[in-house]
Length: 112
Image 1 (tube, rainbow, N blue to C red):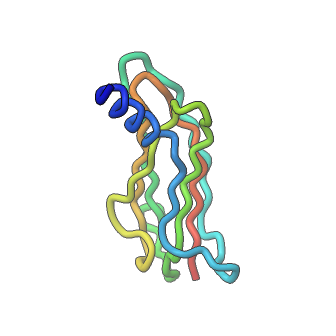
Image 2 (image 1 turned 90 degrees about the vertical axis):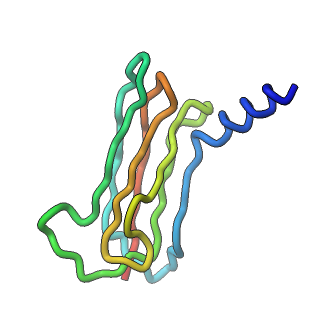
């Protein structure tokens, strides 16, 4: 029974949308990206988002980030901020699928 409960919790931990920071009505959309990576048998699908792109400056401060997992059948992935984010003028986000599955995400970065 405990193994089933742990497996259920792990499956629920994936395929979730994440929000970091505060996205007020006055915040502006700084960057939006749709990510679609096909599944690969025996592998994880990965995608990295770096804002701003290398070599491009950003004078705005990020106030909030949304990562919407578009997969609704518990086979989606998850998003993790590796550096920057709300309060900074840059962010590095990594998306990872579940094993044997792909990614379908929409990531939105807001700031002032």
